[in-house]
Image 1 (cartoon, rainbow, N blue to C red):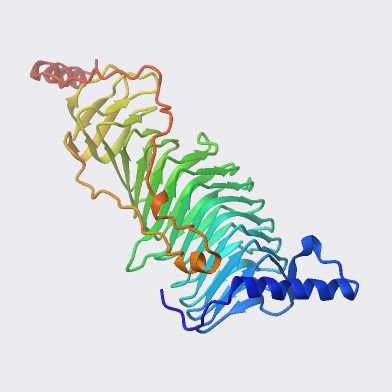
Image 2 (image 1 turned 180 degrees about the vertical axis):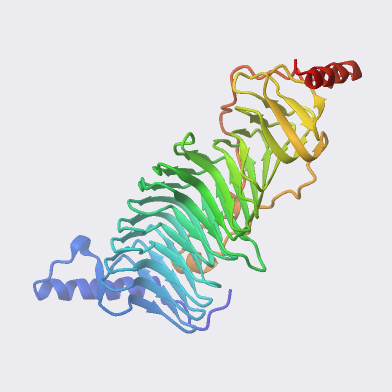
Length: 428
């Protein structure tokens, strides 16, 4: 990673901060927690621009205008043990613009203004945040806006009146070992909003994390005019799955949602101009139904389960040998293709397939994990080792499948198919 400006020695920066604190004490200003402080009413309290590298260690950054810490035009902002508090409308705590980079750890970011995300990466900018906390308290303020790339590792975030995140066209959000909570209760809201078509697909990846939302209707994941890839691995979602969907794809969206080592509930909906592919892999269980006028495909690998609450229809269904497609009581469901029964189950529930039914491996391309943002600049500055590369492995969670899953699916005989046809014909 190249930088035009040499890194400021951390020891020298600490000495500068100590001098500032000493001067403030001499002239009657008691520094809170003996931390250096930067306050500004300009566009941002701290700005790194051009090819420079700005290092902040043990500081308080406050601003009443849009941004707390901003990096622009290829600059680096390296932030350690720093508090960022912004209060103005549309104010964001960390903001990477025009190919710039912000790398932080042990930070506390608080935004209290209206529509002010705690972390923002514009297109081509990136923010990598580790072992930190995020707070967004203003109306419409989400935790993250990712039009570029945002990585969160071991981050605890809470939004009081906004969603969890917005991921823009070709943006990327990676959440690892983190807990994000939205207290927004508005109807028809979204936990995470995926937006916009682009040459590159929008990406959301969550590993070993907890996502919680208080929305009273709407959907946990919502795609609007988006081509998006979503991976939820060893991840739990907590929300009202009876009132809210797991995923809604609308306005010409194309969403591929991959579950790994996860157990999730909620319906998957696609409108008439959209499509959704739900792939269950590595000991995953999905409890929900496809809905809408669009195309919904479901793929279940040999180790996973689909729990179907009621009869429904999908465009394509792929069920590997060993996979279970069952009702909420654990009884296997029937499968029909173009009105013909191809799999007889022990449940009254039936899945109707309109396009194709396969019993082999899924034809869908297997989703790949993204490469995390390179944090070598931060590690070089502070003598740490915070790379996410070693944290991208997954681990299984305790299965949450129905207690009596039974694999009793059998293909119907020709006589069974004939009897069923006679019953349907005469109405018995």
